[in-house]
Length: 138
Image 1 (cartoon, one colour):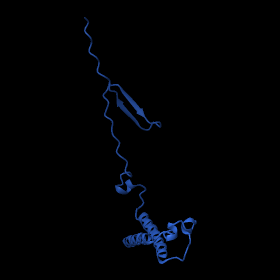
Image 2: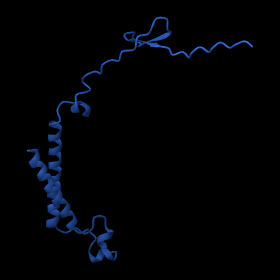
Image 3: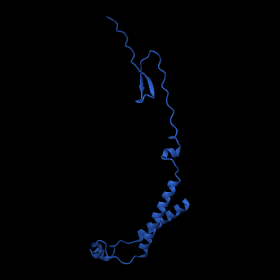
Image 4: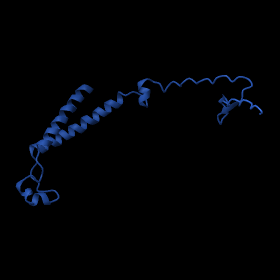
């Protein structure tokens, strides 16, 4: 069904482009070239609808209907995932494994960080600069 609708949509697009390009503008007559009434009025002299204008109206209506139909089919077949990443691999549905902090040796200075609710804590060893060598007395 989607393939048939896509083909119809493509044909309607091409037909609409051709029909619009074949039409002449409102002020394309000889009076419009010399500042006649056709180019000076807001709507211009309006005659009966030509075959090309009727074809343009019908093609534009079909274009809108096929566009909306394709959009509806695309959203229905997208599934229940709320983001593109969830549709791709489902990577957001599984939490990432927590990284384990290296164990701090006894006697080494460290800092313990915890969340505001106190549920998670992490101990980080401090990297102290090496002690300078004792200066020799002269």
